[in-house]
Image 1: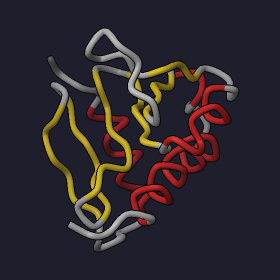
Image 2: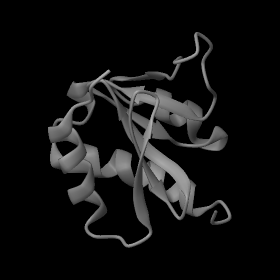
Image 3: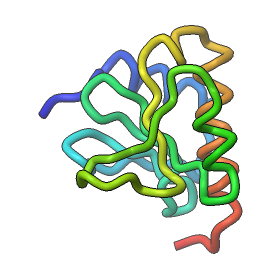
Length: 109
């Protein structure tokens, strides 16, 4: 499964050269890791964000977000965001920061 390369470029830009960020092929797409912990990624043309269990309900209340159900069961702490939810630079940056903030709260790998 291919992923949206233009979205990947936008996410790279949102991380603004952060040296703790790496990329890893995952879920048939690409994941962006902060200090070895997954922050966000792309599956097909949707944004995937690891917001963590404490921020999960709040993230789901945001427009165009839904539970990540890659395995058929919702993964608590992970959300998909449809394209309209990250079209603007500001919205994408907010989602990327949500994922990065959670990843930074974990011990580095």
